[in-house]
Image 1 (cartoon, rainbow, N blue to C red):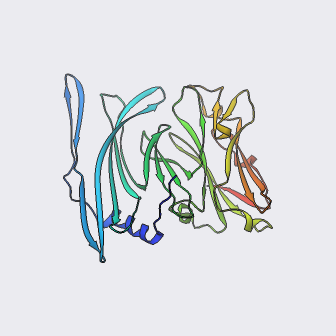
Image 2 (cartoon, rainbow, N blue to C red):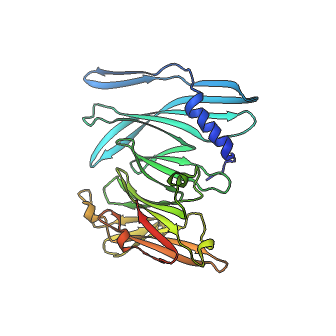
Image 3 (spheres, helix red, strand yellow):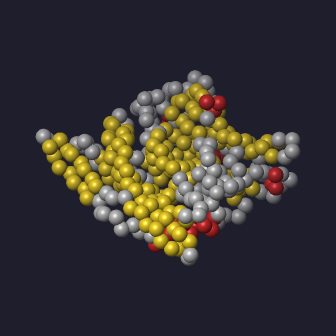
Length: 316
């Protein structure tokens, strides 16, 4: 993805301004829900705004606009149309560029559905996409960083997964929900690992679905001959089937299909594959691996395979 050039200090100041001190004074939203000919009609009005002001001698421009999207979220076999109201606020100085934006997204089920969905969430991101029955927030990388991804479930707006770029996906035939497995590195944009405040923490491996957050593991480095050579970036990640009769890997292992499961699947059916992380290091492109089986729809850390002289895996 395209890189952006913003210093960490400037970016932090901008985000602080976006979230706290620079509230636009546009027209308030006005929601109505009425019925016409027995069918629900939902309407909403909201204004965009712009503010130009002096910020410590620099010209600051704050823009806020609201737009709408209709997406379908699936709860098992039931399709629920959602109206998403997306308020995007961005702030930059006239002599610099900042692509980070504060998104405030609210969702409401519409069109007379019996399934009531209503939620609101706010986050900082560079771009917003909808796929895999989720809302995907992308925080683009700056210099010497990697993109950071967050997924929110469309049914409740809760965060279900996050990783650096390079997530892998598991699909079940006739099921919209997917599984996501990924690794958050020390180089992830916005430095999410700093919040954990863990010594020798190399990265985090996460497992999640379109509906709920799964389990995760911290990857720590031990003192060894190769510790200093292990890169702080995201390792190569693929999915490896343990049985070609039940699972099929595609896209060079970046995606996998559970062939024996269907829309009536149970957690016990999500199995027969592993996630393999390859850490390349050294001048001769040497490598070490972490291989974690997936059993009962979660990472089986007890049976993970890795060099215990290099890594330490702990669940959290």
